[in-house]
Image (cartoon, rainbow, N blue to C red; front, side, top):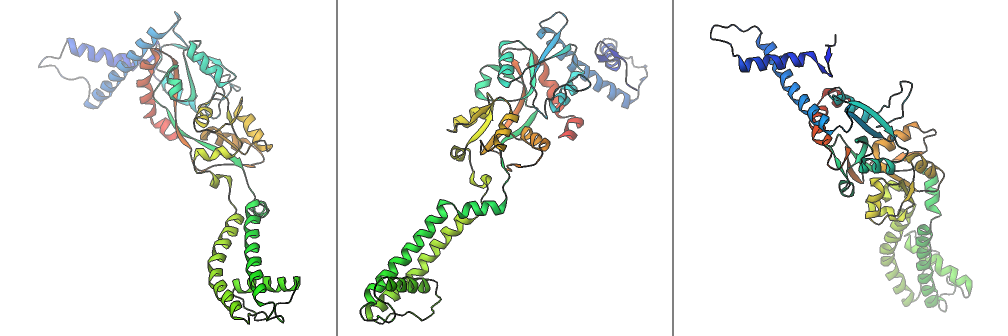
Length: 392
């Protein structure tokens, strides 16, 4: 059964406080017998220190409260799975709210939520002091630290990308008709034609039976060079002159090197390669049509590396543009992208397995807010709690 609460704190905390306070001013005499067991003593000692921590936080929060009723106004912008709009209960939900509940019980203040439609408007409200804080998953950046204060990070994530899911057979056909494949094939045919032409010019006058005159003789030379290069050696065409044999001797060894390089080039062009494999660093995104959320830290990160992404008001709009073929990739926070893909039907988009950078999510406050010093100890304690550890 839950213990009765006194003004926001549990009654047991006050009992512990009174017990230790009296022991400081009226220590037991030499004949006094302890009235509590060692185990209960340790429990009350822990409650006492917890009381001191909460009391200190409450004092700082009371100093930070702008209104007489110590109301804390929290700015929220829907960002599933961290912040989701109120449901049937009328209260917001999500990972950020779950973590906030771990420390909210210890705050001697009334909580009010104020909702914003975009990340830009939320950050502007924090910057100008329209709200006391925001518990949205806000990434800490150098630019934002100039405008507002941040708490201890409560979640570590990463920036990644979403791409269209590719069918292997369709990807093979796409590569087969690519410019790289036909360029390699044209190079191979060109080499065969040149070697065959040389052989025909050398043999056409003294070996007319195998290398005929005119266009037919050019075909004979091309056939001989192809057969020799592939080491098939049918024997239907063979040089008879010394010059032709020298050409054939050189071509047999040169073909080994040439065929290795050209074959590797053709095989590479036909290899099915996904967009994820083509992107090994953020600079590679310069070659692709990329989208992200307007005003997000991801947008600034991409622009820093020379990527010019299309900006969207929400991640839902960006993913819809990707499905319609207007984009080749969407870059944003991994947990938010993962949640969005889980809600989509059909599952025609794929989440990359690599992170482009590491993100740290923190609460945001106006510059100079005393809430930061008040809440940081409670945030650290919440991070160490078993409830939060199990949820991660």
